[in-house]
Image 1 (cartoon, helix red, strand yellow):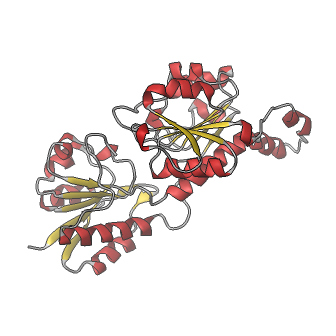
Image 2 (cartoon, one colour):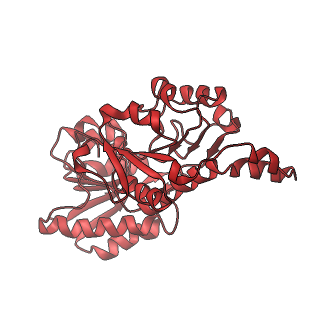
Image 3 (tube, one colour):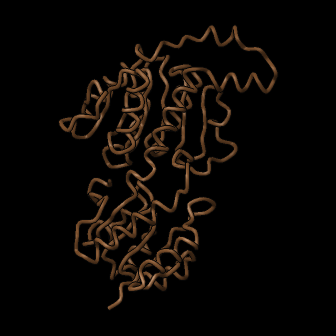
Length: 327
């Protein structure tokens, strides 16, 4: 029996698997039937016959329809939109795109941190008005990196790269991970567990979120966490919007409870024009673009093709997700 692959990565305007990449899959796998199912009616028709899905999200109805399913390859790192009961409870293997875009996301996180520390947003705003803001910026203290502590929350592929980059710049790097006994990459001075999170927050100058959304991490930064952070600290989120209570963050930024935030992920995307985060001076917003660099899709399809060949041989797949933990 031929294997049936349903490709349904379609979340406009950006998260759309190009037609030429679907054609590349079909050309590389002549032994399989490859279906381009970007339209809802095609998905409803094809899901009951799918052996393999190439997707980033599923509705509850779609998950129920996929009764023949054996394996899902996500083109994203986060698999929360796939973790429907029919997927979690059944014998369906889920793999993700962990590590594919880690270099770009780590660089983006560091860029946001440095831009906020060095008042580059203020410089840009004054540039628009042709104002020489030398005295204004001189009055904003910025300790050197070797006197500044970065707390990286999550030490997967992305968090580990961020930690190494931060250490390379001279920062004192601490980290939080679910299993602290695993340690961290070279340059990380200390790895703590989630139980020590607030104490680590209290000491950090820069907090960088690189953790997945799970039952343990959902809303990691709320009123209590913001309250213990230094007034001079900044928060960087290149992970998931739902890790942060946005209402509490807005209040903390507007009151000066923390000094600034660099945000690449939001609860609602695209963020609506009336959202208050747009107008807060000490915030840099990037539109969930940290993963962009070179071609976003080719590495994702290359990973899928590699995993497919493993799948048909019965070999272990790359990037298998623990469905109970969600990553």
